[in-house]
Image 1 (cartoon, rainbow, N blue to C red):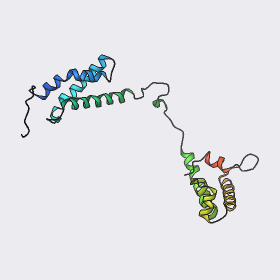
Image 2 (image 1 turned 180 degrees about the vertical axis):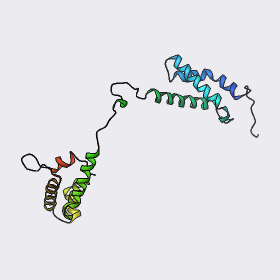
Image 3 (image 1 turned 90 degrees about the horizontal axis):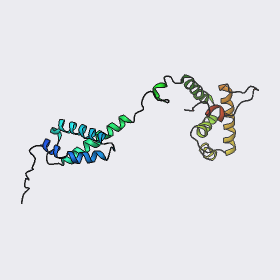
Image 4 (image 1 turned 120 degrees about the horizontal axis):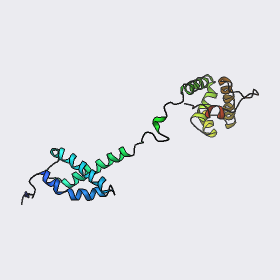
Length: 188
C-alpha cells in the first residue's frame, strides 16, 4: 500500500512545540542544576523555535529540531559565560603594552646577513646543523666529506658569526654560538 498520511492530533507546529515543553524542561535540566537557569534555557529555545517555525521541515522530528536548538543555545551561552571577565588579576585587558619586537627583528636580519656572508662550505654546514637540525653524520654525507671536516667547518662558521655579530665577552673571548645565537635570536 502506498504511503499513508497520518493525521496528527495537533493543528499546527506551534501546538506541537507547546506539547513538547515538558520534554524540553527535562532536557534543559541535563545542562543546568538550577531550575531557574533551566527554565530560562527553555524559554530562549522556545523563542528561537517559534520565530523560526518556517524553517522547520514538516515530516521531520520536531523534538530533535528543538533539542538541537537548545543544545546550540546552551553552547553559545557557555562560551559567553566562560569568556574572561574584565577586572580579574591577570586580565588580558590589563596588558596594555607589549615588548618591542624591532630589536629581535633587527638581530634576526643581522644573523641572516652574516650567515650569507660565510663561505659556501661553512654556510651549508651551519644551516644543515644549526637550522635544519641534521646530525654531523647526515651533514657529512650530504656534503660528501668526513665528520671531522664538518665539525671543523661548523666551528669556524660559529667563530666567524660571533665576530661579525659582535658577540664577545668582557675578556675579549667569544661566547659559544649556541648560547649567543639560539638563546638570544630566533634563527629564521
